[in-house]
Amino acid sequence: MAKAKKANVEDLRSLDVEALSTRIQEEEVRLKRLKFSHAVNPVENPLSIRQLRRTIARMKTEQRRRALGF
Image (cartoon, rainbow, N blue to C red):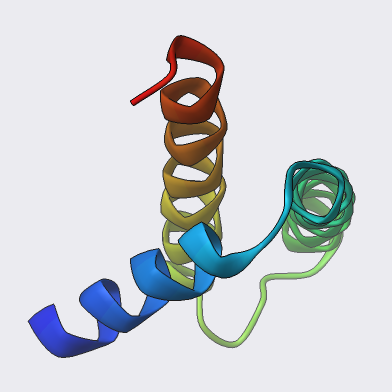
């Protein structure tokens, strides 16, 4: 699991600023749809909501890191 997270962070760092912003927006829309579908009819894997939320947080952290110049 640790290797998957490290690879994910490396993938995020390789994206440019616009691509990262676009991907954040896409994932947020995906999260909203997933939450709505879960409210109407339970999803097969409810942990996917948590994973998606954490992925978005990682992307926003990378975006903020770049904004601060690190």
